[in-house]
Image 1 (cartoon, rainbow, N blue to C red):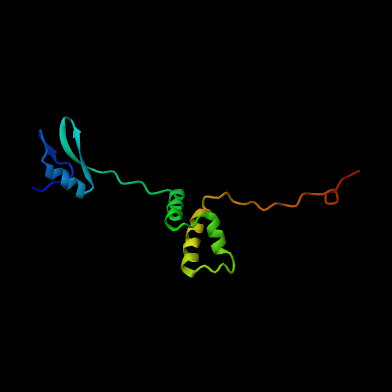
Image 2 (cartoon, rainbow, N blue to C red):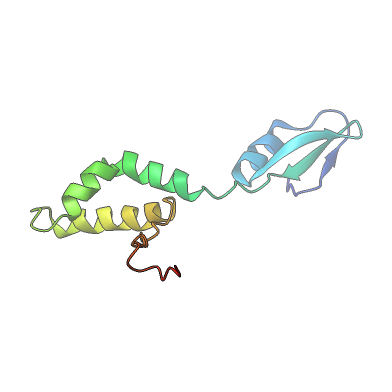
Length: 114
């Protein structure tokens, strides 16, 4: 039998319908007392923080290790440097922007009227 999203079953639904749902991003819910095939909601996209964490876990390139790998004359392979740079580029979005410090004004710079 062919199944489709929105199909309604009176009483019991056939086990093949559940198998079809598993293979087609759907599930069976009880709506208005009837079993209905419903499409699964899309999975949310991972946040940048989750992406960085996953890449760090997958590669072992934590922030400290990335700093060592990306340092001049680190001796790391181009592949490892590339992976470290990929993660570092993503991770930069998570860090607060560094504001350049301005030189404090001194008495000589302030024109004081006496």
